[in-house]
Figure 1 (cartoon, one colour):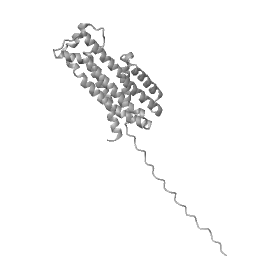
Figure 2 (tube, rainbow, N blue to C red):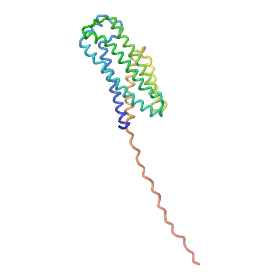
Figure 3 (cartoon, one colour):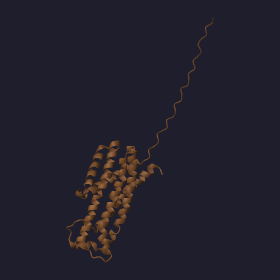
Figure 4 (cartoon, rainbow, N blue to C red):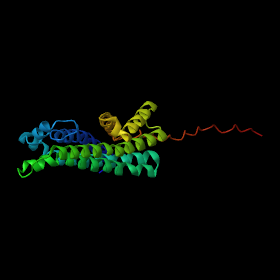
Length: 238
C-alpha cells in the first residue's frame, strides 16, 4: 500500500471517529447523571426506563470503536508530522495522547452507565446518591481525558508552525484549542466542541496532504547544436 492511500484511510478513520464518539457520548447521557442537583425521582426514572437502558447498552462498544478509529487517525497524523519535522521525537507523543483520551473517555462513560446496567438486571436497587457519585466520577474522568486532546493539538500545532505547513491564524487557533482542552474540567463542554471542530479540520488537512503529487513533466534532453561546417581557407598560388 502506498503512503498516499494509507494517509487517506487514516483521514477517513478520523472523520468516522468524530461521528462515533459523539454518538457514544450521547447514548451514555441517556442514563448518566451530570448534575448533582437532579432530584432523586428523576434519577430513578432515568435508570429504570427500559428504552434508555437498551440505548445506553450500545454506548461502550460504539465509543470503543470511535477510539480505535481515532488511534488509526493519530497514526497517520504522526507519519505526516514525522515527515514535516524530519523525525522530531515530539511527534511520537501524538498516539499516546489519543490513547489517554480514549481510555479515560471509555472509563468515564462506563461509570456513567454502570448503574443502568445493574438496574436492568432487576436485582439491584439503585441509590440516587450512589448514582450521583458514579455519574460525577465519570464526568471528571471524561473531562480529564481532554488533557490527551490538548497534547495532541499542541504537538501538531508546534510542528506545523516550525515547518511552515499551516497559516499562522490556524496555528494560533490550534494553540487556543489546546489551552481549552488542558483546562477542560473548568471549560465545561466548550473544550469538547472545540476539539471536535479541530479534529474535523485536521482530517481535511490530512486528506489534502494525502493526494498524490503529479510527477514532474519530463524535460527532453537538449541536443547538441550541430557544428557548422566552415569552408576551407583559400589557397594562395605560389
